[in-house]
Image 1 (cartoon, rainbow, N blue to C red):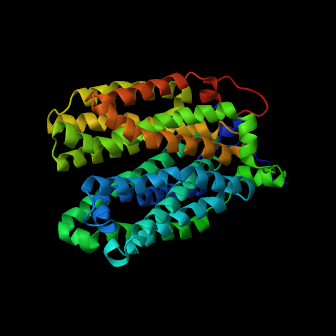
Image 2 (image 1 turned 135 degrees about the vertical axis):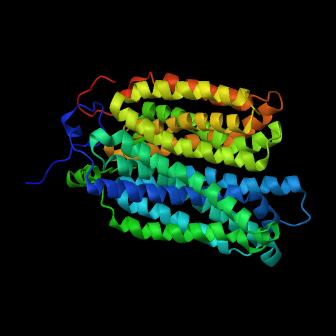
Image 3 (image 1 turned 60 degrees about the vertical axis):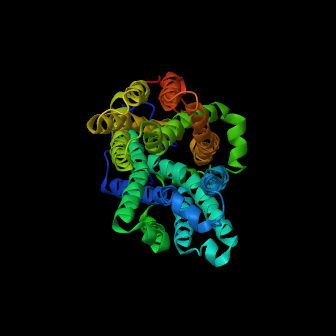
Length: 448
């Protein structure tokens, strides 16, 4: 007689429930490891562009173009990756709820690896003229579509595999792997720039990170062949309970509250990542005159503590419950962001120490998928999370750099105010019952 897997399997509201008794098996560890590795490589492929934006701007646009316009168009192509996330996420998630998590999980990394490899092989403006930036734009659009499906797909895939009592740790570890892609990109960029002269970087060395990312991405596609479909989707298919109508239609009709919750939490996530991790290194150099090497070193430390923080927050969510960890995590982010930005420029030691501390609390972003995955029922879980997450990230991830840039004209502490305000929002969202309870199709269990 076959074992019946509850539709809420792996997504407990109460870690003391009987379904939470199983511990991590060797198969769970393999699933988590391959998923995290793939997430690291895919996010590396997505962000490596920003580390070589200045070089790409000179190579893919006319040499006589004003520098400000060249940079604007270069970052415009980077932003195109964000704008294409919702469409890619919706399409990939739609088929993930119909055909299975594993197929779309593998497809998303393939769609990221190939464009990354192509970017590394593209001819420049000097060779093919205006076709060069157009091809670069097309590759970024494909990358954005891929990342839009990868992150929600990875969270759902792992959440539906790991045992209930390790749900937070599993999702947190996967999120750590994804954010580790930023650290990997930073380290590779530093290695390339230290190993080659500026002339060599512009000549050929800029291609190395993209080619490596593409090749390793294709290896990850092969490795994902050894993953298994999630027990939750297998049970849905067995009961013929997979989504029959367009999943997005069901989400907008029946799960608007969950969409709002996940969308607002994603705003908090985008503020922490975009401001603290991506914008701050340039802010340290431009506003406080900190040497580029020191700024990048401090940023690498903060990214490392962010990665560790994701694991810590996931573990704590299993141990103490999601709600109290949200209150502590986002409350800590509010306090440490002010400590960091008001203490600048400080000494090298204080800069690295305070940046590392705020990075640790940025790890609270792992709570976003922990809440978000279980906010939707299994039949439309992939589509619901993908729609809410990607729509919010496309809006707020794109607007945040503009908001901070304009705000800095008035106040040098604009990054601190913005991050603290969104951390306060995250704190308040921790009080929402759905944040601690999740989706319970039959009998509600009090939120912890």
